[in-house]
Image (tube, rainbow, N blue to C red):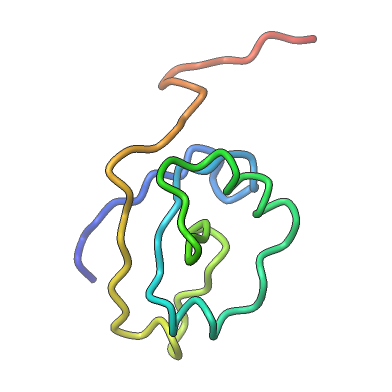
Length: 89
């Protein structure tokens, strides 16, 4: 709605923390708990807070997030750069 692009380097596969957002306490409390994989990725997030979540794991359907304002941290940690192609192991 606000045309704010949120980086999502792993396209929602829980392999990065580039879509890290900080939610208001009431909204955070209304959401289901983050899974272990999400918490592992949040551990790598820049500016982690008590109400941090990965944006790709939060449903924006009508409800607690309707009209909600989130904070996007001023930086992110993206270990792969544009055009990065991993080498086979």
